[in-house]
Length: 374
Image (cartoon, rainbow, N blue to C red; front, side):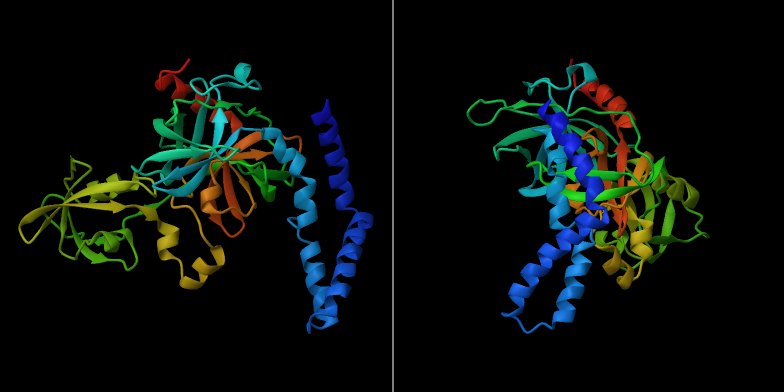
């Protein structure tokens, strides 16, 4: 009942916040602070007023973020931080096989964590809980098409397994224009966004960064040119190299090479077998998003940091929440505190993608079954 009352109060407050009365009150409070600070600064009053007005009209200003905090707290212990190779790489969402198990604390052997697959490496994985404790974890199943990985949390050095509470996944899709909240593992609001587009397919185009010689007559395909700042360039490929196999699969001609590479998602590593000066070599290269490879330096600066895998989803919700790449993998909430999706990619200056809960539920069920869970 307490949570329901808080949610109801939050909705009323949210509506009032966007009303003129509340906005004016908030501005007045800020202006009082501004006048007090004006005596200690040389910034002109007109500039201070403009800066205050600009900040107060941002939907992610401090007052608004504090206002939606109760919604973020509804996920309780359902969000963890994922650390790989000693650095934070993503968030993780605690899930259960069936919605029938949702809502009650369960042992870790029955609670799993889903996160963004392409941010993981072969380095040791650990998860950080809400209370700061760290536990080792392992990848139990993956889904390339959705860029999801299922983690199983293992016992720490003392033999302890934590008690976690799975989030509630709801298949309800918010209407375009709805407010969406993204929490972190401490239930802090890390983003307040607006729904931009309903579930749709997000196409992808991975790029190795080579131009192939169409006149080649031998098996495989000969590299004619290497694009600068591309995966091929970073991997050390050279003009004249002949690609004869990809991930151990022999390639007959240029079309075969192109079609095989087109099936690889950005962020995935391909093992290339090449012939150079008569010698056969193995080269590893990580595919990148074609749009990123081809964008200008100014475009890259405007778009900011993005995930390596930012497209290629069968179904995704689009919203404009500003997230860091390592903040994907966590839940996306509607104004009722329901988890309507999992943030899966930061794709551009005003574009983030989330997998809808209806898709996530199916993927989670199959991954847990694959991992041998009940």
